Picture (cartoon, rainbow, N blue to C red):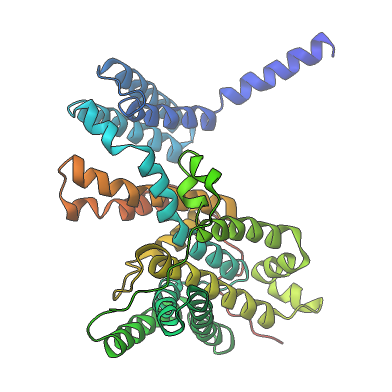
Length: 400
């Protein structure tokens, strides 16, 4: 390579490093670093490090806002201030308390809490990639949670419980698909309707079938007996369970199906340009029905994880908004399986962190319980204007 070429490459590299977006991202990273320095394994007990990182974040944000990178610039400023203040607050706590909060167990719990969200998020991606908004993920998870328990109690085996969960989750999704595709109802209204339907149906059936609560022992999804997996740090507990393997397989298969197969191409085509897809012989209605039912089956698996894979019982409205969080993960992940899974890990961390924070830091239970939902709001606010959904999502298709 000639000297002139090396000089040109060096100049391009320097130019990219001095772009406003790059500087803003550096500022955001420094804002996060300011807070992270006060956490294990660093647990810095002096204010110098966090203050320096926070100052760099603040300077980067102030530098790029006038240059047009307003959104990321303001994020750098906000994280610089919040990260520094948070670090100073953490330094008032005992180092032993912080170590007891951020343990390997918390990170393992993150994966467990993320599992039901990941199932529902993958389902949401299939539905929305085909052009159908699926607000009903919450209801489909709830149906899966109830009928998973019902099937396991009725048959005595968790296998039937999973099959019943998938069946009834798919049936509820079929209702949503019929109203959204054939009747061309407002998809958001239809989604909320199936959520209320699921809440009412599961509540009525639970109180009717189990008026005194579920007294029999529920057949739960077992762990896989592969002892060497339990020696893997952080993820051994999850990988030892059937649901852990299924969840990772679903995430990988979702990517492969959507982006590496003709079926995925059809799903994406009807979500982007249904008229063009129809013109070349693709059944828009058929593809959308299949995608929405698939989303219901996957969301129901997430609900079944809560009932027969996690707690071993059912309580009314036990999903507690997890379907909505999964939908937020879909948007946060820009309708891509890998990024959506990463988003579920973020929200799962919020659920996992709430437990030791309440126990060790003495923070109000009611306040701590809002942490996952606050993370959801922050994530969505940060992505508004940057996540571009499929072009035809939410728009009924009229064949003709």
